[in-house]
Amino acid sequence: MIPLITKPCSWTDKAGRILVLIKVKPNAKNTKIQGVVDVNTLYPTKKALLVAVAAQAEDNKANKELISFLSKELKIKKDKISLEHGEKNRLKVIALNI
Image (cartoon, rainbow, N blue to C red; front, side, top):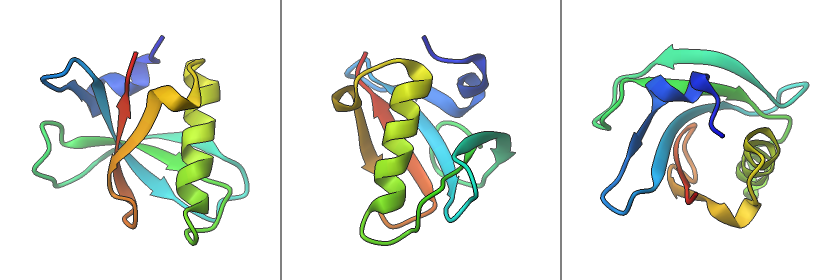
């Protein structure tokens, strides 16, 4: 299921989906979770999961790498993960339809 590290970074919407706030660091050597950081947002959480992504932030490469990584880490299919907000921003909201 979802690692405990996402708990302070997530909330549930009216449809029952789990939303996770993620701050992405593109162009990293390896794709990995680096921890939890404080963020100033209007979202229900003020913490974001910090994920280093081994892809460039162009042509949607970093977003695709992030979804692929989350799919493997959470052991859920890619089609159950969607990018809700932040396509061209480092701060993203990911929806988990599980």
